[in-house]
Length: 160
Image (cartoon, rainbow, N blue to C red):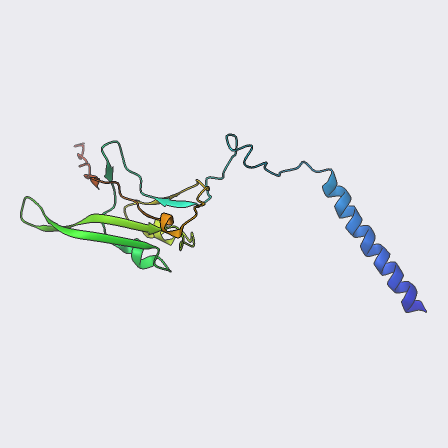
């Protein structure tokens, strides 16, 4: 008989605790975003990883040296760096980026490619609207047509 009443009081205590949490949350400010109605005013966090991009400057130059470190560190083969050898004016052979292929459909957004890139040539954008009807549209070339490697600026040492 004591166990019966103890069970009832335990149940009522649990119910009161649950109702107190519900009552507290009922009066909080709502944070639900009314998407897509608020598309123009939507605030997306800077830390959001949505799509890998390769920034180019005004001269259509990028920082990728085609070293392939991002491709090696990608856990599921999302990145494919295709390079070609080019001869410099002084007769040396140099590796140059031909195509940088990225498959958004297989990307896990782990950020290993961005973190390990020694040139900081790639980064994640925070544009989140990436829905398409066919998977083939998720594969894209990140380096623009006719783009080339950005020339390193020579720093002049100031004589003191």
